[in-house]
Amino acid sequence: MAARRPETIAKQARARITRIREALARIDYLCSGTLLERTKMCGRPNCACAQDPAARHGPYFEWGHMHAGKLVHRQVSAQHATVLRRAISNYRLVRKLLRDWEVETERLIDAEQDSQT
Ligand SMILES: [Zn+2]
View 1 (cartoon, helix red, strand yellow):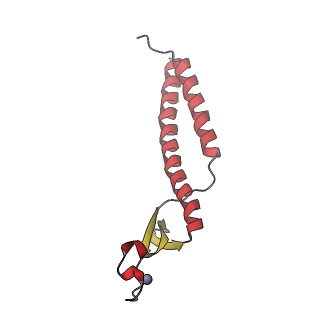
View 2 (tube, helix red, strand yellow; view 1 turned 90 degrees about the vertical axis):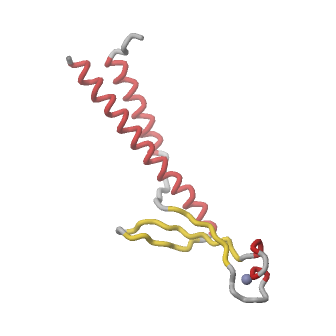
View 3 (cartoon, protein in one colour; view 1 turned 180 degrees about the vertical axis):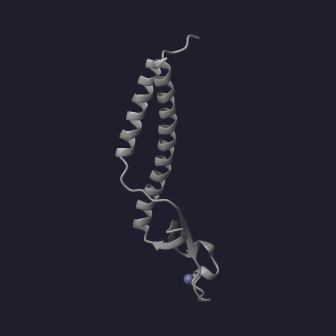
């Protein structure tokens, strides 16, 4: 297989970086951490939740994330949980896009070096 020309590699890397930047520009909500969904027993002996796990109260949503170096847990509404789920999945996507951007930048730098020699 013939080696691709450095100009071709650089062009492809630039095109991929453009797509990464466009994907980043589309991201709105961004949160780190994890979202926990749990149900609770209220402790009243006559409540259905005392006997039946399916009758437990909730679901309740708890968002755990690092804030100023400390792990913070916050109770959030079901509505907020929906937004948070998206924000947390966006966070993973941004990290992936940054890793891809790094890889493409290295490719670009190498190709630019090669085309100068
Ligand atoms: Zn109960």
